[in-house]
Length: 390
Image 1 (cartoon, rainbow, N blue to C red):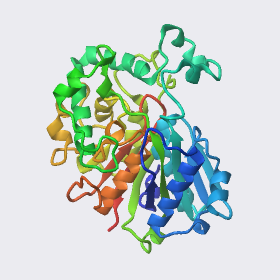
Image 2 (image 1 turned 60 degrees about the vertical axis):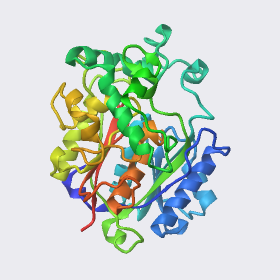
Image 3 (image 1 turned 90 degrees about the vertical axis):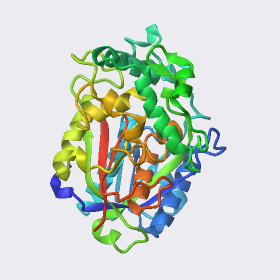
Image 4 (image 1 turned 180 degrees about the vertical axis):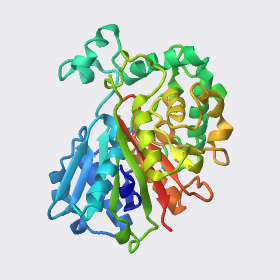
């Protein structure tokens, strides 16, 4: 995203379904519910919408969403690949569309039955469509889940910088603390301590415990994007899109980039970070709060380093419970994150960030100026900086 796009588009509506382990309805219904809720929140009608953006992984076709909601026509539709790495990318595509006049109102959505309809660890789910070429080097040795793919990177990171699993536990404690006071979170009223984290069973020893791993959830979320000018006349204080970026690093694979010279970083997030700071004119010190994609706790520490909040190998000292909680240097994941609220490919991090801009979050951070949002890690990814309107 160039500086030309800065603050020219805004998120004006947010919507989400309940988060559950068994939604009892189709993914298309979840998508339509979320989109309708976002439009109602913005004070707009389906007839106002002329653009839709979603993930390549989403099963709900744009024309089916449009038909079921009564959207009369589409002049723009787009999909972003690489799983959770797409979350902020959908907003970038929408912002470009409205800023250039290709569309007037664009809705980004994601909906799935990730718990009731699909289970990681089921080899049939992973291999049912045939073994992907990139996975053929690893699957025969048992690397069939995201936890196992992440763990190899994280183990090298631990060895290089003297990081322990207890350092990762701080992320889980912060997220669950915030989730405990968020009625929409799956782990509402269920905080944990570091001792609880250390007592949870190993998933990949000595890297990941059960409480280092995000949930599997059913649900949907949607965002309404329009121009900053139009946003001023709508129902809520708009969240201006100050910067948005996508990034892919060299010699990458889908979560298994093991042939790189250095496995201790997240080059994709580094590419995103460079663009966000350049386009916004901001620095890490300007960020009031952040939603950092937390599918697995080790990659939150690595993100902090790629984004410039601390130096290489320093996240273990920066990422303390005190620093990352409300009142700390950088409060993160105030809704509970993917670990505490729900795993919705990061889209619920964007809805929470908009609530922080509006001042309506359950765990409200005082005097919010700029919010950083990151999408999935270990894959080509994306990020946002959102700011309140003047």
